[in-house]
Image 1 (cartoon, rainbow, N blue to C red):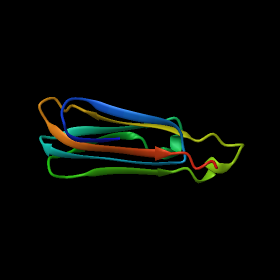
Image 2 (tube, one colour):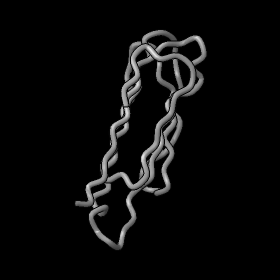
Image 3 (spheres, rainbow, N blue to C red):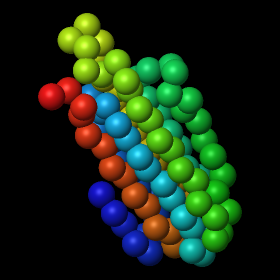
Length: 97
């Protein structure tokens, strides 16, 4: 999912992600980049992202290929973006083949 010059709130999630890559880059104003997951090791949190900078989140669930391990459900959101513009990306897929 790719949004260019977006405004307002955006979010995206994927259930059973083996790999996830997401980022936000504000082109006007500052935004809040929120990461939430159903696994505690992911390192969720809220991150302030100033204009003309980028914040990335990459998650690799190396145990996702095991039938005894459920893969991570992960969501990223762009918040506090009213009147701001930003580019937002979210890519995720399951590595269980």
